[in-house]
Length: 330
Image (cartoon, rainbow, N blue to C red; front, side, top):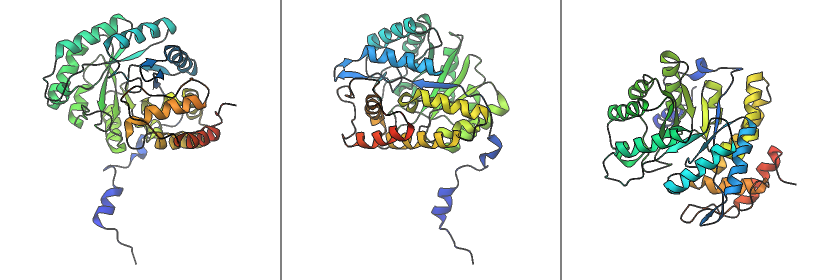
């Protein structure tokens, strides 16, 4: 006698039309990019020294740093501060630096292509690889128009990254349809795109398109709730990695070596991600500050004025996770 599942229960279990097992890529070398937290000394004062130390720490671990991302409060700190942080970052490290390209607008505004081009040009002139953040004007366009705007950026630069961002992260977020995503792969200077829908099935679909159309294109998972997407051929640009760039780099090395201990470390890091990225998702940045302070890596876990916060009781749970990972400050 079979036990029937209701239609809704059956549907909830179907995450993709095709099982993802064909995508598994054991012993693959993973490209890891980490969105670097901008810590604060008080609600109005960024901790610049703490930021630069953490930037260097990220690079020393073997990850590509990404600054002025959501994790670094890029959309809210203002153009002058973003430019200052990029200048300091370029002086501090000699590797590739990814930097968010922002057009700050409001709901109902038209897309300002000139503003995006100026931002991209400034980032390239400063020595960064731009990643195109969503804006309200851009998100209001049709899929094919967004691809056209990305292609226009591609004509100005030698290298850039696209960005699909879910609305749970930002109200101007936009996820492309799969046909439009495939069109992005025809832009030669778009070398990859971050995907932050937090839906495995959408990422698996993109990985299959990548494998079929352009195998060197980086599908950069932004799914902090499924950090094992690297097993299926994804690379990553994640906010959760700023909590522990050293451990994510070690995890990646274990995967490349075929070390079975990869799985336990990945599970522990995923536990951290599930806790930190619970609703409201944007408060993960406060979780990051709490965790880095527990590690003894920054002096303060305050957030900037107006940013969502976590309760003080989270610190005890984060401390237990830090102990489990073996990184609690002594």
